[in-house]
Length: 97
Image 1 (cartoon, one colour):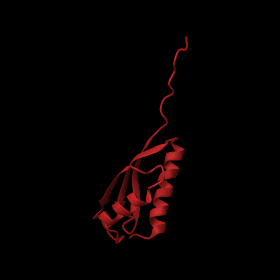
Image 2 (cartoon, helix red, strand yellow):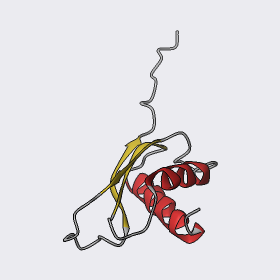
Image 3 (tube, helix red, strand yellow):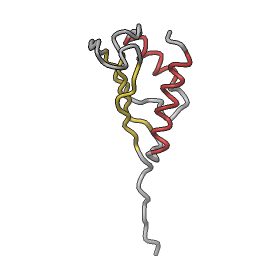
Image 4 (tube, helix red, strand yellow):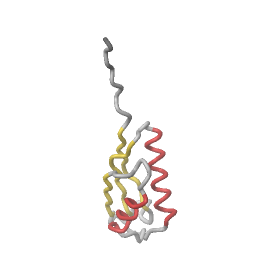
C-alpha cells in the first residue's frame, strides 16, 4: 500500500479542484507516476479507488500512467494530470397551471 498521506493528499487536491469548478462529482482522474517514484501503477489504482469511498471522487474513472522519461522534473513523484468534474444538474423549470 502507498503511504496513506500520499493518497490522502492526492484526493484532497482532486476535491479542491472539484470545489473550485463547482463540481459535485468527479468523473475521471488521470494520475501519472514518475519513473523514479517507486510506485506500482496497479497498487496505486487500487489504493486510490479504495480511499475515494465517501468522497466526491467515489466511482470516478481512475487512469494511471507510468512515465519512463527520466528527464522530467517530477520523475520521483506522483502527479495529477487531469480531473474531470460534473457540475450540478441544470435547474428544471416547470410551468404551474
